[in-house]
Image (cartoon, rainbow, N blue to C red):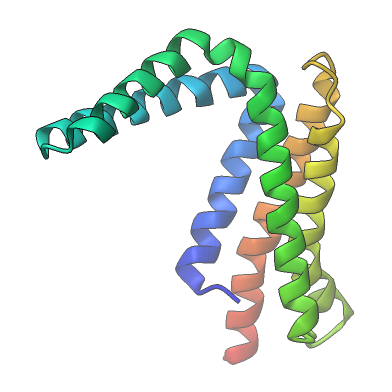
Length: 164
């Protein structure tokens, strides 16, 4: 479904985000909101420099709002992230099912279907986070992302061994 570089990048990213979720728990979202605010401000500055004034001003205002009120947006962003992850997981699973993908053996087939299922499970965990008080949601989510990353990376090496 993806090429080798995308699988490695996605796998490593999933492992890193998983570790951050386990270690920092809810604080990860505050970091994400800060980075997002800085990125939106940067886009606004770049648009202003490119003489796209209205868009640039709107992006600057949005970035400042995200930086100032990011803590209030964390809960909303958690639910938004959960919904997006759920849609992505369902899309991935549907694509694999529609293509009737099968591995060389049962374990290989499971490793193909597992990442979308983990995304869906993580999304469901995030949807049931009540006001950020349940740290286990972040720990479980982190564990699931680490497993997903390991599966994505190991699939590359399994495929390489079978090709030789």
